[in-house]
Amino acid sequence: MAKQEDDFKKVISHAKEYGYVFQSSEIYDGLSAVYDYAQNGAELKKNIREYWWKAMVNLNENIVGIDAAIFMHPTTWKASGHVDAFNDPLIDNKDSKKRYRADVLIEDYVAKIEAKIEKEVAKASKRFGDTFDKKQFLATNQRVVEYQEKADAILKRMGKSLENEDLADVKSLIEELDIACPMSGSKNWTDVKQFNLMFGTKLGASAESAMDLYLRPETAQGIFVNFLNVQKTGRMKIPFGIAQTGKAFRNEIVARQFIFRMREFEQMEMQFFIRPGTQKEWYEKWKENRLKWHLSLGMGEENYRFHDHEKLAHYADAAADIEFRFPFGFKELEGIHSRTDFDLSQHEKFSGKKLQYFDPELKESYVPYVVETSIGLDRMFLAVFSNSLQEEELENNTTRTVLKLPAVLAPTKAAVLPLVKKDGLPDVAHKIIEDLKWDFNVIYDEKDAVGRRYRRQDAAGTPFCITVDHQSLEDQTVTIRHRDTMEQHRVAISEVKSIIHKEVDMRSWLQRMG
Ligand code: GAP
Image 1 (cartoon, rainbow, N blue to C red):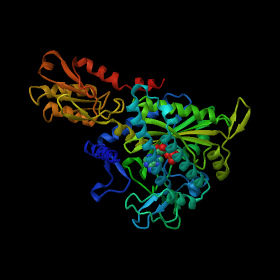
Image 2: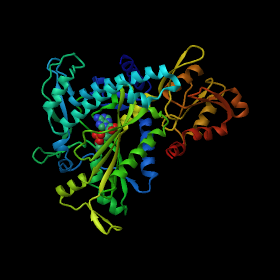
Image 3: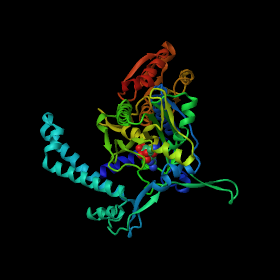
Image 4: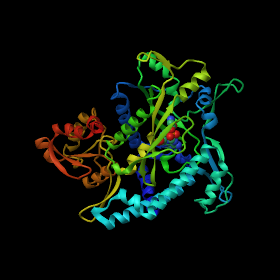
């Protein structure tokens, strides 16, 4: 646990030191769970967004993208169920006065049991070596089976209590498991209460005419209310999808873990409209498709897993998370939800407008069903960033810190470095930049010895360093250094663009999805 915390602290401080993420309003001591993306962070975030948009919108003929407003008519949130049901169960510790999400306390308890299982697996794998069969071990090892049964039983009971709004039982569960306040160790808990997560604001100049609004807690509703507009103007035929990226806001009770749980964050969502009765098939397809998107980035298959929901949101008939191994353990990265016709039917009811589709094949009208994919851009950023940050032992007994971002996402693709600041080398370097900047984000760096510059770019996540030296003046060649292998090759200046292009081209990365 201490190592995990330590690793996570390193991620946070590296993100600040290398211009990725800053605490919001830092000069005023910050604002809790609100963050700003700095010069490198903004680029990385933009590249992730683009990678998603390309895969979801541009590469699918039947998916289009929109950009709906953050402010929506307040009835939207009545219809969607968020006014009545977008709650988190919270519990206070009477001694430390700290507030927690009751379900998160229980999930953290379960995560500790899961960590024990992983420890047993690691021990056994070491003991049995190549002959180790993990599946068999998980199914037959007495201790592991007991741990798993205990974890499953806890989650099942919590899911049931939350579904039945039996908050007294959630509290009993916390007490039975002997869960203590992580800050103070006290077990002196209040009752569990529901807490609505939406932020309210007002629209209008005078107090009398002002209208109460909410900041949207998900981008999805902007898609639902535009369903017919898009279907008609885009002449879309079911099955089809509408995607969008944008800010969402939640008054999270427990805002912690850096950009994992924020009060202002960005979502990338897609609602896929389908014939009623086909939802199971599409739900499975989108689960598979989204996992492939993640795997295309090469961050290790072992770092992902599906988690099927016991407790379903008020709109879903099936739901699963794609979980990622963050520095603090496996946690939700993306949700895939079979939302039935809940949202469109509710908007029909509350608006009095028909939101139906005439299916020319079936020759009938219906309210489409929806399968949704929803990923937090900031969470994806954290997954990519934390997974990429590595300390490497080098052959000469030194270490280097390297941010091995997938090259397609790296904020800066290449740094161009004149070996010295004189003899016309900076001019050659600037000329290379003039040419490359139309295709890639590149930077110029002339400060410090070249070895230090390499280290700086390694830590910033730049996949290539291009060094201009005296030989460059004679034969129009440079050295190109690869961040991950540290290998250097001498190449013609005219080849540099195509070498970089080959490694960062979105097409070849996304083609890995198959
Ligand atoms: N439209 C469905 C929806 O909003 P969700 O599971 O509540 O579902 C989807 O959120 C995704 O949004 C999550 O998987 C997560 O990546 C991201 N997300 C949710 N709350 C967040 C928060 N407070 N901070 C950062 N990301 C968040």
